[in-house]
Image 1: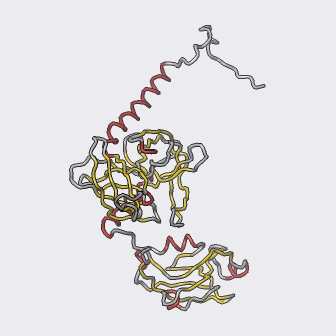
Image 2: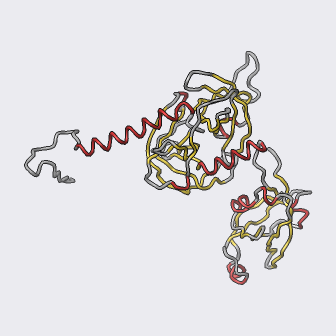
Image 3: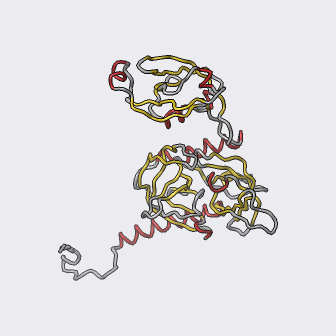
Length: 340
């Protein structure tokens, strides 16, 4: 049995009335409510419901497959951010605004590796959101999510930043870094909607939740989203380097790591080399272990992916390789990754 000591009324004021709060508590709740309602009133006109028909399923009279999600306008000329998994492979995209307008949306570009996409609505002078600074977020900070879960338009949930710096796999298998974890409830259809701070500034793009868990939800930080959006608007895609290897993370022999002064005890073992690829031209072989690329240590397959940015495309980069116990220094010139 647990005894709870209630100090209410010990000063001769009698027992506390169930559910009654102090004036200070009421003031705090009122301030919280005003903060949330103010954000919703200001931002919700810029949040759109996106309904998607999957490619190849829009034949007249035939069954149509698709889904729905959320997005938000970040430029008055009709540009909206959303998740790649909402619109990737879409045959058609329909956007519904809170004022009742239903517009066709065109895909500007999407990047499955970061699960981000940009779409454009026709027209101009759209309401927009203000982009914030996700690097300034702190655990415990109030955040608000607005989206269209299960098609229920302009649904609001609120919570806190549960944790920062999480990692999450995108549907393409790449690791997404700096993910924001929140307990603001998300459901299918929230994907692509904004995660907002108490000032109504976007700090993340809602992207995922853990099924059968209690409000384990995640958002892509806005500093990642703005970078990716800029590249999608410019190129329609993110340009990444490609070497042409299959690889897996392995542990380096302890003696080898110690003698070579390696900063990590792991590297990337080559399990396959594609013909006529940059890796083949560089002389990489199966079972070689890559420990460095472009002057940076390579500790895992995910780390190698992070280093294969557009900056290394067409540039001869040094490659530190162990072939057995022999250390080799090769040069490899990455090419742009091939589209799916």
